[in-house]
Image (tube, rainbow, N blue to C red; front, side):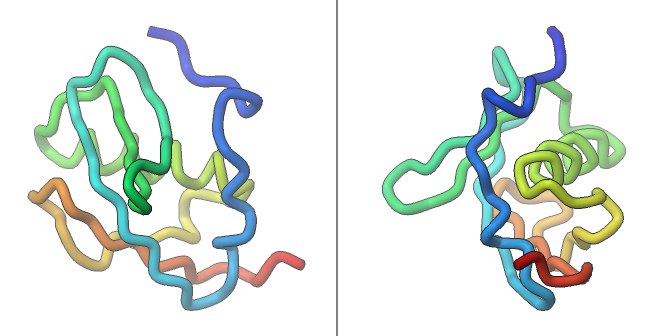
Length: 95
């Protein structure tokens, strides 16, 4: 599977505020990488298998791309081995 293009991802730049907590529900081993809002919840699907943190890294990369920030600005605060994850943005605020 190819990497999703930025035009295929929603613009999540409004989440790039220092200290913002971003709750996501993750679906690993999906048919394609995608980000969508469903029932008021941010859902991220990745094609990677959930072993040795690979899916977490893929989610972090996809989320950072949609936000337009470096992946290093997102830290996984909670949910290392769960589908419900909480990321914290620690980079500079975007205006």
